[in-house]
Amino acid sequence: MLRKLINIIIAYSFVLAVTGCQGQGSKSDVVEGDTLTTKAQLLTIVDCGSYTLVDVENPWKEGATLQRYALVHRDSMAPENLPSDATLVRVPITSALVYSSVHAGAFHEVGCVNAVTGIVDAEYYKIPEIVEGIEAGTVVDAGNSMAPSIEKIVELSPQAIMTSPFQNAGHGAIEKLGIPIIECADYMESTPLGRAEWIKLIGELLCKRKEVAEIYNSVVEEYNTLASSVKDVKENPIVISEMMTDGVWFLPGGKSYMAQMYADAGASYPWSDDKSNGSLQFDFATVYDKAYNADFWLIKSPEPNISLKDLESKYPLNKKMEAFSKGGVYVINTVESSFFEDFPFHPERLLREYIILFHPEAIDGDKSFSYLRQVK
Image (tube, rainbow, N blue to C red; front, side, top):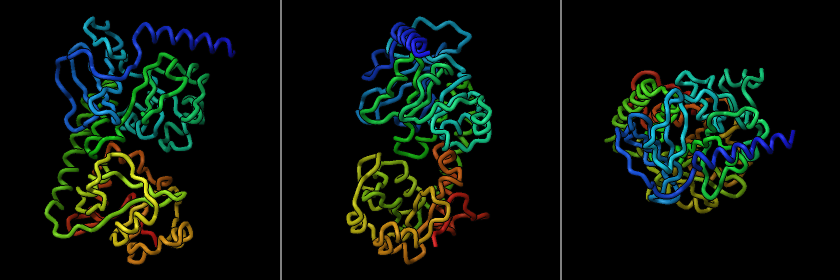
């Protein structure tokens, strides 16, 4: 079995060398066509007629391309004018290994959940069809995302692998299999609508452009309507998020999509002047000095019934935060809710809840929460 596996990997590697590897750097070929993306900063999709060109910018190196893909319908001949630096991807994809429940959720929303034939980190998936598929063996569980089973991936032979890039990190042995690795850098976008637009990449891979356009346009319309409702509010409550874990308090960078969402919800974020779009790392004293008087403290937690007493037991000085004593601590339970699956491509749903919390007078009708819960 091991020798057979090695032979397969070698064969795949040869195919990769022939068809072109997934490189990094500047784009060498200039193309013309209709650009389908407008708000995403790290994703450009261009309809070139006989193929679709997808560029993923490097979030950590300005002006550099992380990956470039040429999407060609599987029933068509590959055109001769494909950019030489692009990885050929045949679409529609009918078998994908998906690393994140976020992207699996997008497959589900556009009606192609059956194309998710393999996953990693199975414990994080809530989509019924995928959970049932794992149990029935029709969806392959390839193990842990940090060290997936190469043997299972080779046996599955997916047409694409959907994963997320990290700075100065590769994808290990799967890079040698010759399977297109689709780098989903949506989490590094600086605006909620920019991140949500990455659903268009899923749409192109599944040949569901029209369906995805309808979904995205609806998201943009609802999001902008909500943001407009609090654009001229006179008071902006101060907001902080997350909590210290193992001595480190991770907070959204000032140019992150979450910081932008706080602003769009009519809130003031103490680190709004920061220039990073990733995470900030502080100790408790630094956060306390800058944001002890925050009106709202928003936490994401896997604990279903976390209480103020629990927060105090985790770190006694948590009770010194003013939101702690004034009823301003709210939690999103990430295990029981579908927050992680919903939010990236539907930021309007969370924006609505933030506005209900910060400026309830701006929202008409139902003011119930699907994600947020007050911590008592």
